[in-house]
Structure formats: C-alpha cells, structure tokens
Image (cartoon, rainbow, N blue to C red; front, side, top):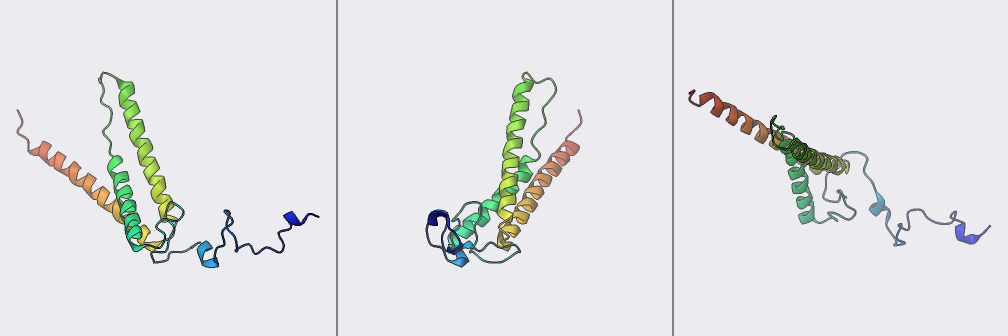
Amino acid sequence: MSQAHDHDSMDPGSMSDSGMHMSPSDMMMHMSFYWGKDAIILFSGWPNGSLGMYMLAFFCVFLLAAAIEIFSVSPTAKIGTHNPIAGALIQTCVYAVRMGFAYMVMLAVMSFNLGIFIAAVAGHTVGFFLVKVRALAIAYKNETAPKV
C-alpha cells in the first residue's frame, strides 16, 4: 500500500483544506445558541472575532430582514398596463431579490449566534411595522379624503 494515501497517522483536526495548521477551537461549529462575537456569519472569516465587524454583521442581518418585509408588499400589476410582460418581469426580479435576502438571513441565523438571531427577528419586526404603518396611513388618507 502506498504511504501517500495512508491517512491513519494523520490528526484530522491538524490541517485545513488549504494545508494550514488549525487549532481545534478554529474548527468548532456550534449546534446550539451561543453569545459572543466569535462567529462565522455568511462568509468564512467574517466577522473574524472583531467587535466592529460583528456589529456590522449584526446591522447587515437587521437590514436584510427588514428589507424582506418591505419587499413582501411590492405593488401588484395593474390591469390595462401597456406592457404586462415588463410588469411581470419587475415583480419577478423583486421576488428573486426578496428570496435571496431571505436565504441569506436564514444562513446567518444558522450560525446559531444569539445576537444574529436577535438582529434577524428585530429586522423582521421593524420591517413589518414600517409596512403596516404605511398601509394604515394610506387607508386613513383614502378614508378622510373628501368625496367628490
């Protein structure tokens, strides 16, 4: 048997795919909620243990979650528009962006970092609130408008 393919003597936690030596703590993947800035969110090496980058990740997840709620009420196509294909294409693009954002938030939450989970829930909550405030303001304006 060739020694080049004998992996019995290798320590599986000693090297990464790139051949760099890694400590066991670098390879730890949480499978339950934990608190702390030492997380990997969306991209390998981000936020890299930096408090500033962790806060940026927190804010990005918050904005993505709020955007999902805001994009969920895209205007519907109106009957009688000049180009229904263009209207449908725009709605499809908005839907694709919303789904992309939703999957990114889902993947961020799968880091099991409690702060990121809170950011996602807070973002969805604020986005929902903004959508409902706008809808109620429009309904109130239409209700109080003078009838001609």
